[in-house]
Image 1 (spheres, rainbow, N blue to C red):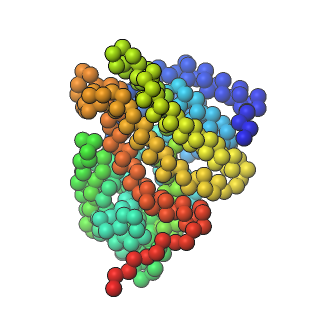
Image 2: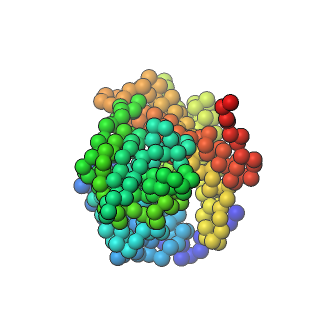
Image 3: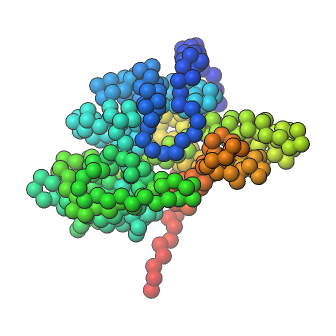
Length: 396
């Protein structure tokens, strides 16, 4: 593998490094839970968009920077932000914005993308239901077109951030007589629409990250749809592709590894830094090997996209391997802190504002969210490796 960059890209790397040196102090500091972006975070996002380090390839007419797609430059940005320990910018909702760009109408692009990438419009995803999690296509929330309005009735669950969201993109069954994968539409609507009730679900992190969401005669305009009626399954899979990629981002895993190394240099037992104790150092080195493996797997994907090729198996393993690796990095951090590792919330001895405890528990959920590890393995076997499909259980 040739991972050398030509002079143009090396010059761009220097440009990114210079920006970080000059502006790193403006980046939001510390760890915070999920919620609406603060004024500081919105200002940082605006600065990143202005310089092309967020929303880089989103056209200017939709609020982005407007650069030509260049995956090597995008990779350099992500890599340098990870090395600097600075959270990178984003494209707003990384699940929705790419889908609106690919499939949405011109009116939808102009109305939705700008506020979303600036952090002014927050979204939640209405996919899972109490009876349709892994088998998402069996969802039963219904949408009936009455005149120029959709009328929605049903329930969603595990709706991340619904209590903070301005908008929802939601899978709704609109064609009851069609096969289950063909009778779904991808609807979008404001969360303050009458008939929507959100009930927070407190997880073991102590936060209400997820929610139950109920729809009772919710009326939205007929044009509140992405793509064509009955083709929501196609749109949903485009969304999930972006979600799974973001959940296993190797650059963010490398950033977390660097934070772990710093922690193990600072934490001591009888005056000896943990990183110098063989049993801890060996665990760290094993994880480092996996971090490098994920990084170079990401480069394989990068190479494929640069050649306009389908990455195949390397793309399919990102979510599965990334989420499990992130969880194990946090587990080592907690072990490294010893008895301090069990602390949570407020304590004068809390390390990194409780980031490691929170991510340890959150990542365990992400191994399930966005497609469970078992479902991911099935997809890898069937779609990437061409193995026979898992036998369907039928009850006599």
